[in-house]
Amino acid sequence: MLADRTSLGVVAAIAAMLAGINDRPGSRRASVRRIGMPALAGAAGMALGTYAGSHLGALALTALLTLVGLVAGGVSAVGPVASGAGTQLLVTSAIGAGMPLPEEGWLRALAYLGGACWLLGLRLVLPTPGALAGDFRFDGEREAVAAVYDAVAELLDAVGTERAGDRRAALTAALDHAQDALTGPRLRRYASSSAERRLHAQYAAALPLAEAATALAWAGEAVPERACAGPRRLAVAVRENTHTGPLPAPTRSAPALRALDDALLRAAEAFDRGRGGDLHTRRRSGRGVLRALLGAGGREYGLRVALCFGASVAVAQALHHSRWYGEHAHWYWLPATTVFLVKPDLGPLASRVLCRAAGTVLGALVFAGFALVLPRPEGLVALVAVSGALIPVATRHFAAQTAVVTVLVLALVMVGGEPQASAGRITETLLACVIVLIVGHLPMPGQRGGGVRARLAAAGGAAEAYLAHVLREAEEAVVRGAEPPVLPQGERRVPRRPERPVLRGSSPAVRDTRIEGTAVRDTRIEGTATDDPRPLRWTLRREAYRALAEARTAVALAAAELPALARHSEGSEEIAAVLERLVDTTTACAVHLDDSGRLTAGDLDRITELLDELGRLDEGHGPVGLRRSELPLAC
Image 1 (tube, rainbow, N blue to C red):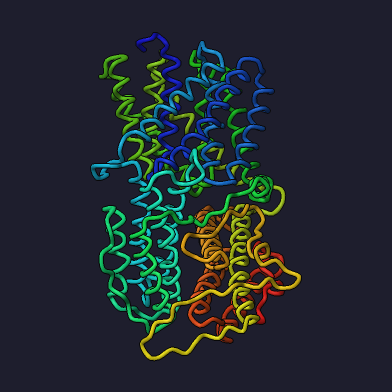
Image 2: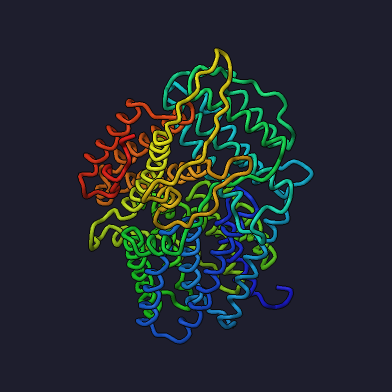
């Protein structure tokens, strides 16, 4: 406004608003990807929409934006960040085409990037609310790692109770969050500061603890209270950035308890040394991204988004050219609203529609009241600032977020010189709800439920890789003929890993780690032998539980849809439950293998039963495709 370029300020404010919606609690490093990549897609959409709206007719513009919807919908199936990028691409292409501003497309795109970079800069510079005084650079990472140790303690508390399953899922979520917080984009390949290396070591030390706690939860026998004290003290040490002090050792009466005791000792040593540890992640390859984009889930996702977005653009163009808007030329609200309604990763379709309608009506009415009493433009600018500050709080509920965004956008439109448009926004939102409800439930070509089937297939592949690795460890232990030594009563056995032989006609390093769609990084961790199979096993276990969590989320969202959509994912919940039991059993077998050097016949029988049950549910044509014949069960 001071530079008399109000229209560019409006574009920058829209970018900051959308960037604030994409931001989530976590590390600053992770926020660069969460905010930056969608901002780049949004700037591209703004330029594309501006030039298309200026040079194309109604039919050509509708066809182009429908194609953009197809691409953005397919990209959204890749992952959460890609979904945010697809959302911004669609919203900004509609705004660029429908918002009459004097600036050219490239200048609007620069203004959009400037607004997003402003919010990203604030996110990187300002301390996290509630962070302790002092070095707050890694407060997000520190809190995420501490939450992992708290989740381990809560799982140990819940062992033997009905809460164990939920606590195990919470531990998976905490590990996923910590892993994402620590693996954000960086200028250097490795951690460059001692504080960050210490956090990496503390995270790596939590993985054996999580493995032992999962095995204890699988066994279902209650553990002593002192077993939970160690992880809680480690959590306090992470938050306060101090040493652990003495840790209470649990009893060593069972393999999982012995594994927990050994993991606590290794964690105390890692905390004292503070050296960097491996994060046990594997970079996703371009081939895996293309498979998610062009697979069944990506095709179904893209087609649904394209149909809904294209239909809304067509209706908006028809209403606009028929002068339904009168002198008001802003037709972008209808397709922009459709974008937020049609995205399946934002919640079930019916609840999204209801929340969007209620939030828009509430926001429009609130803004209409403010518009009557606030001075212009100073009061409207203040309203924009207040609404922007409320976005991080409002993201907890879709209706509240919609209400805040509605107030913010209506205020920005009036700041840009347009008349008050609350009534029109309510009408367009209700029309968008009708379009999405109708088009979103139309029959689609091919087999429906592609998103759920794709997630289950990924979970099945990750579970198969994890199980095959553990079974191969047992197989090689049998080949070596390594029998566990018999020690005097009370003497502790320190596991030693002899060299793993390379079996004739096979390459264990390749066979164990080759999963479609991933590229393997070095999985060795400091302080372990280079031939130690545990780091790779922890990487595979992390991938299996992360894939299962994503599958569970997809299944829950599909089950909450209206019956016309929910019926396409029937039976998926049972498959996901069996996969979870299989991965839990594999984890318990891995702990038993570390303790005794071999798997028992009972271990193999339990795995075989789960594979048979999974095969019955899958019926040979389902999404999982986990093949018992390809697993080395004869250990």
